[in-house]
Image (tube, rainbow, N blue to C red; front, side, top):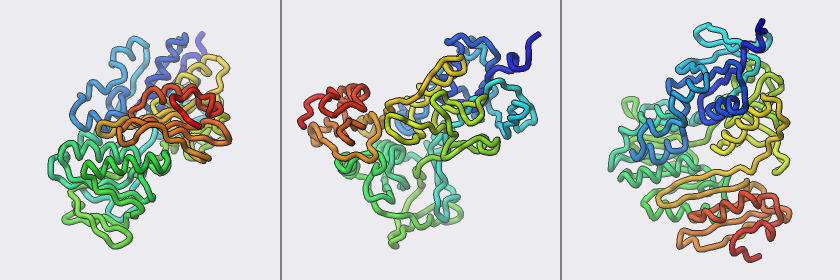
Length: 402
């Protein structure tokens, strides 16, 4: 007789990159139990990085975004429940409760719920024409507005905001970027790299307003027409992109009584405070021995690698997830690649020629390499991914003069 634990199997809540990877890794690792993936969007897991770049620009079809064709999930014997919303986790009964009232048993539950756009904290944020970019539906909604001559106002000078600004300029829109920090990408790169990207965007005709705080959005007949800044300036616009960051979708975990702190807290196995429940990808927070701090990473690398680690743990392997994170951003003809984390660096070493759009910056802390930002310099990026945590002189970076 098959017991409940064996028949219940693994239920994955979420349908992004991490979810797609974990179901594939479980089957590849020999898992033979029931496997169910639940997603709110009515589409199989797809790539999100191209949304603000090639897909928005019209260079990529929606079908090309799919991580795997639907047939693969059938081959993996993974039950797909798409366009379905989970409203509760009943830990005592070990059941996932859907909005429809249906209950699904689980032996192990994996949260792969990702993030959502942070709400714009300003009056008028609910006006027509104020958009965010997190999903395929968001982009399809925005595309009709990307018409040459339209005035786009971007709130936020991070990756998403600058990528969309670059696409908009290439399509002939007039673009302004408002960033509350004193420089673009301030939370993730050095002043040298910020200055470089500021010069690039200004040369492309983007109006940049750094150290500028949004006070309110003003509308006419319910549609946004201008932004008012705290210093009294007003910027006219036809639509607004809110790109002020993301927050983890950890409410289900919180409501279920799991330990959360800007994400579901997990150990090196990906296990939450309930050993039957795991969390992976953008919604999970773990402790990094490598960087000596708690991390919640929003990256493809983390989604894939943490999913593999959690799948291995479910299958009984001893794992201790502690990666070298890496990220990238495409803007105009530039590819910014980041290996490691630069927060708290002691010194930064610029190598190469920013004027030639080919350089990198190596960040050092306590005598060790902690991060490298590479602009159109893939070799330094690949070497950095192997050299993070080593003394700077032993990291093997090209042409580094100490």
